[in-house]
Image (tube, rainbow, N blue to C red; front, side, top):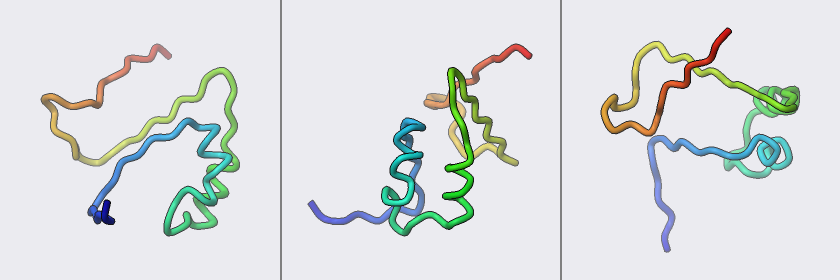
Length: 72
């Protein structure tokens, strides 16, 4: 297998894994500012993260992104 290069990558990781390995799982390493933000986040029974974009960047039809309706 040979190294591949991409313009963009979207990855997911369980939050506990991210907190434990954030300093070593990225190359190049995340900035100190981002590492501090990850370290400062807490978690318990429920953690919601909302991402807001100025414009759509994904294809609407056939997308793996789905709306999740949340009361409150």
